[in-house]
Length: 396
Image (cartoon, rainbow, N blue to C red; front, side):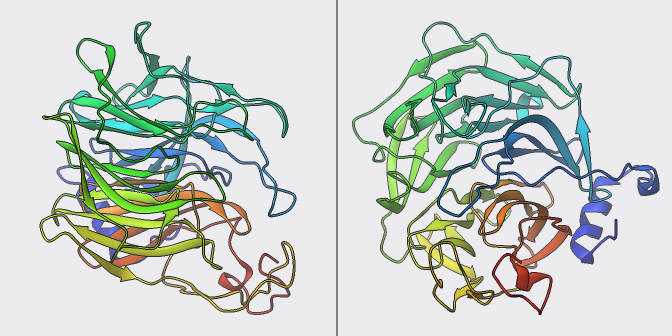
């Protein structure tokens, strides 16, 4: 694999501190399939992004849902820009639309919830199990959580903040056509191994697909929606782990346009939030713009506009190749991707759902340079104009 730009070289140098540089020629050439409905977390000790499961189903047309769930654990290794699939004797079942959170103190990734079904119709199997992936042993362990726990659910938000795991919202209906929009808040005591309901009257409106991030002491919640046809939100909330209270930081004025299933990360050096992509309710749909939020100034700032709308569809699921004016310096437009933030100041984004199915690339946004770099090029899911000038349609 070709090492691209100073960004990957920066990651290489950081990961190789006090060690010999990795021999990248010995790494197997392996790529995960394109997939969405997954998340990932940063393993600082080993310099890698850890990914689990997801949905690799590609709809036959743009108006249907396809389900083909996987249960694989992958890592993206930043020292060589390479992937590796990991195997554990036990692991969570195949699923999508779950949530993970980084428990840095215990060197692990926590996972809760999600759903599975075999095929494209019928009710889903909903999960309320809690798992931990140990970064040091590369093993999954199901955690004891007691009888009192959040209901099985999907499309919720979850972060570790103030030394505890917090979960908000989501949908606990197994019927994809009849969702419920939850507004409850739950706390998991990482030491006692127990859940408690800490719901307060003042909280964000019930929603699904909200993006979340943690600065270590607080959980931030952005956007989301009340289903595929809306309403969609662009409000920003903060949950303080020390007080157990929600605070609305920013309304929908002077904010990124409302959307669902975006990616939100905390940039600790810059003391700001970074928000990428998602699906909005404009003609554009999937987006690839990038924004920063400064909590001290209470201001959203656009960093990259991304693709812009150019031509309307020719008909149902029939888009011209120049549907958008492509920003080649930004990742493909998407939602339901995995993201994480490295200790070197890079926001990594993997996979997600695009106009052309599901994608399997990795991009890195350097918070210092404020520029994107393609770290692992997509082999599927990109719009035609990103790889060819002779396109007859958006996706071929």
